[in-house]
Image (tube, rainbow, N blue to C red; front, side, top):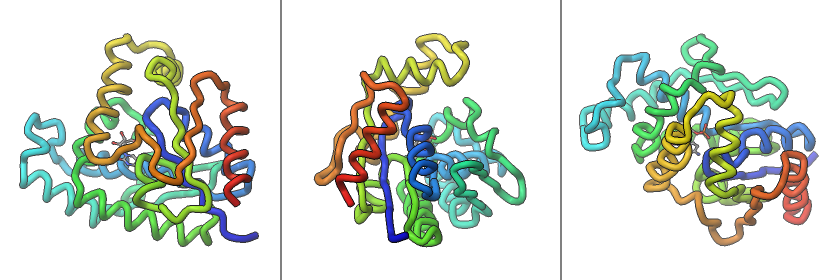
Length: 229
Ligand code: C5P
């Protein structure tokens, strides 16, 4: 089959990872979760002893250049099969641990480092090429920076209430409202200082999932892809 690159961006809790995976399965495409790459870099930095939680992280030049160095050397292998995604660093399977709240809490220190982003963006572009350009790539800047030339470009949104509700459900309902607000709304506010994923760029179609269930959201995304071909 021919080239089909689907770029999907959106805030946390919008369902973009699970929706993108389902779309990739349905269309027989590879699946690239770029958030997992920022999480893998965060894990690697912490594993290497970098203190990302330092209050001055953004202002600390030494730390910032250490993060860039870590991005360049990151021994990362991404498994792009939507039936069985894997994230491996230095031979260790970190697919599950990168979802830990300690990683979510530290990831912005990496994601707001523009030089480190440039390194990851290059790797993401290479991975897209390696799929033969048959992939659903999902993140915050795929429609605008990584693959602005994608066949279909979608911004998946939902109200803050819906997004906090879904993330809470995902985490097993054990989080307080304040925790969820930190993990969803505050993280997005920090992240959106470097990339705008709250408003659709020109040529990007918005799918608002606030009133849709999972299956309806997948269908709405597939409709946009069909209309874009
Ligand atoms: O989507 P997920 O929550 O796994 O993403 C983790 C973090 O990675 C985000 O909070 C954001 O800081 C960063 N990210 C990014 N650009 C992307 C994907 C993720 O900055 N394309």
